[in-house]
Every structure is written in structure tokens, then in C-alpha cells.
Length: 181
View (tube, one colour):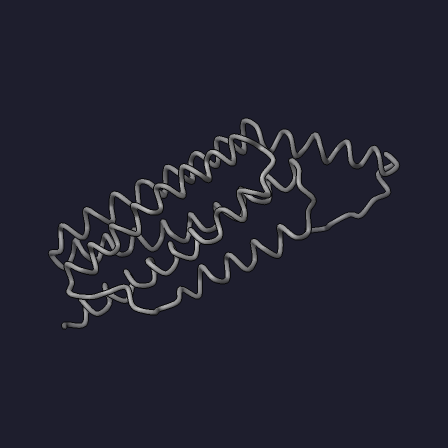
């Protein structure tokens, strides 16, 4: 196996691990969501992710490889960070906004991975693999865009309103915690 093929196999295995970790985390995160639209977005993306895993398996098979036991450390870190952030908030509009931010970080990580693999496969003359990864890349971009639209149209306004009500209930004098960040 030449060096470029080895690199593609490693990148595909990393993406495979990332998707499998994401699939395991999605139901736990979706349960914490308040917004029905957000829950539905998670359900739709979980189904899509299963197809993405199948595409990764197809691409690995075309290269004569298997998923293996590689663990995507990047996705593991993103999931750990998300879990920590989710623990800091009670269920409600603020938590929904936190969920979207965490999920979008994961989507951006996957967008970078699939763009890289698709470009490498295309350059190596592996058009079938490039096409499989380009299809997944488009789905990841669409998932990210759907989350952005949901955040802008529904979730962020609800979080802002909830945060303002929380500040009023806490005294309304603006004497609460301040962040300089």
C-alpha cells in the first residue's frame, strides 16, 4: 500500500471513529433538548450519520481496508467538552443554545475531515471515494446550516428571552456576574 493510500485509510478510519462516537452521543444530547425542532434535527442527522458510516465502510473496502480500532481523539475531545458544557445548564432555552453550539463544532470538525478526504481521493485518482466523501461533506454542511437557521429563528431568541427573565428574577439591577470575555 503506497503512502497516499495509507493516509487515506487513516483519514477514513478517523472519520469512521468520529461518526460512531457522534452516533453514540446524539441520543443522550437529544434527550436534553427542549425544542421539538432541535430534537427532530438530531433524529434526522442520526439517520443521515448511519448512511455516512456506510459510505466510509464502502470507501475503506475500495482501498482494501477495514475500519479498525482507531479512536478519533478530536471528536472524543469535542464530545467531552460538550458533555461538560451541558452539565452546566438546566434544561431549557439556554441549554438548547449550548447544544447547537456544541453540535456545530462537531459538524465543522467533520466538514474539515470530509473536505480533506474528498480532495485527497480526487487528487489520487480515487473518484468513487471522492464522490462518496463529497456527498457526506454536503450533508454535513446542510446539517450545520439547518442548526444555524434553527438557532437564529427560534433557539437564540428564546435563550435571550430566558436569560433576560432570569436576570430580572435575580434582582434586575444588573448586579449579577459579569464576564469580560
